[in-house]
Length: 334
Image (tube, rainbow, N blue to C red; front, side, top):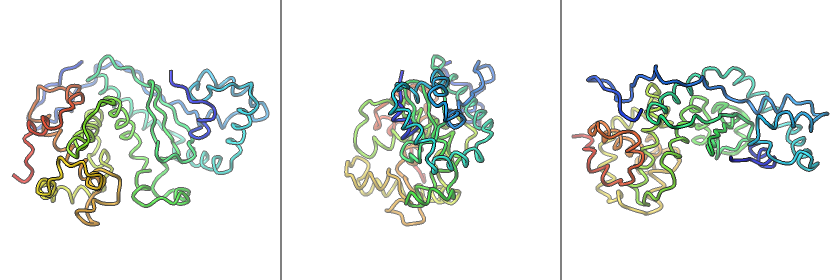
């Protein structure tokens, strides 16, 4: 079992496709017969801040069986207790907790969305085990808003307080990063993190096409888990971004091909087409960011549409990006 030490917690503190009717997405499957318990998110943040600090050791010992991944350290060690007390008495952490309670006092809508998503997971992967899900106050760990390991999914709830949350401004991050802290992205981010685990650490190649397909499969997986979720949410795109790429998809693909970027391992090419940014530099400030990921998602989506015999599990475990492209029939603008 994965364990987060006390010190770390302070830093963080059936396999066939459903039949599809014409015009119906292959991911609109019937999960009504999937047996799944309602998802209940374990609020470590709330439990920790409810302890009586004058009886800290005894209080933490009561919590330890429920939150071993956070409280795995030795509670008889005065240094450990001192660090937890400092965390609880940090005014920034305290105020952030108050703000998360205001924003996420009731998270039943998130639990319902996750229950539906994990029902879809069991449809495609019947032998999977639903992870235990926890929220915590990370101290604004914006690089790791979701952690998934050893069947534990940890949500840094303080990273979903909204783009306009004033304390984010103190982090000195650019606007396009602040955009990621949208509470509407929480469920999709959980599914994208789960997709990473499904793809695993197998070597997928280093050229642009390999990375496009790998990232595109994550978006595809998210779509399969939450078919009703808008594409813009999965892609973290605004309405304007979606309008732009709908109009310009063919010319973006043509640009990549004509400039011989598809098999390039050039760091700058990859960074501009895959990396986080306010827009894709090759196409100006009005363009969406990460257009390479969008193209990858379109390729794998069309591959699945044109190859209905291929299951979700099979595409997730297919590491031959060239074969996926060749058999996709992807020809935007034609």
